[in-house]
Image (cartoon, rainbow, N blue to C red):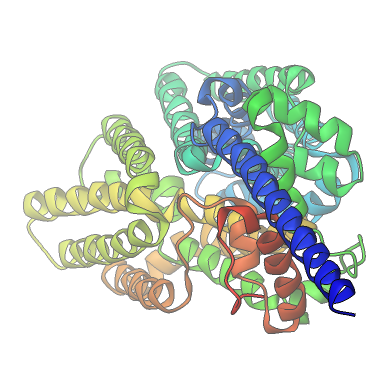
Length: 516
């Protein structure tokens, strides 16, 4: 009996020692693998790989800015040639019909981007902009102009939404804020181009038609350039085309970062959710708070009065006694300068701080504008008015302009990102439409002092709203942001993700018993 017990104890000791040695070997192998992976992934992917794709996508933002400012300078000439000069409602319709088309386009943008992919959505947005430019350039009536502007607006509604999605999804996280600012910079360049091209409109009869013809060129470049760009790996992965997603990641990030990028995509997979997203889910489902935040941000962006400045800066400058061509060029340069500064600061200071400072600075600038309206002396009032306008444009370009288009695709889950963006941008265009339609009438009836004070109030409301509702996203991957913002109903899913990560990182010692 004693010999048998001794033999049993010796065998148990042998099995325990063998198990310990095996565990040590496994841990050493795992540690080596982890160190190898860390060595590969601590370096960020090259930004040069994704840059051409981002630049091509932002041509749609250039077109957005161009058509936004296209009728600013030529509006009087268009009205005289087409026979509605002096009719403020008709002039407002020429501006706002484009925005009405953009509202329709933005509602369709989510279904288009999810249905045919981001690349094809860009190409489809370019088509009505080309046709609309031709219609507007050849028209001899107000009705023809409104039809052309409606077609252009439809393409404008699709383009910015898809640009925000695409740039966010193809950009490496460490430079996503900078690339997101490219959208605003391209918009500024489009605005400036329309202002420069519109300068000869008063000296050359029919020059406004040339302004419309020119816009077809970048639209054609966008449609052609997208043939050579990568498709969004997020969209491909969502469609179950993982092999293609890996190939596109290799184009955008380089071969060393493909596995880690695909692993990040897998984190946000939740098999219990259907592939299709209903609009009712966006308005009343578990993600409705994020959609609400995005919609309010875009509404406040427009209610600040920024597009009233862009659409009618010539009229405001003329009333202040400033030559409109010089004033508009200054507006464009200030807008571009602010956008470049935002590009530099976006990944350093973060989205939330830029938004807070931007809305507050815009409120101060609108206060200056309201004060300028109370001056009877033309000289002092004119200088103060122009100074307030330029300060307002600068502060807008620093945050309220570029941040919402970058922030919303970051905080929206991959499954509903496209359709949620379409809802938020539909709110943007609806408010934009009424601002463009009613600004001149409100300016006549309320006066500049009251109207600018209302705009300043909305800017201050933006400060309060951002402080309470906006989260910081700089430097985080889209999947990290999505997991952090999971609603309470997804706590079990989040727990499964944490459990999976803990099991994967066991050898690195990154998981505690509390997390399990």
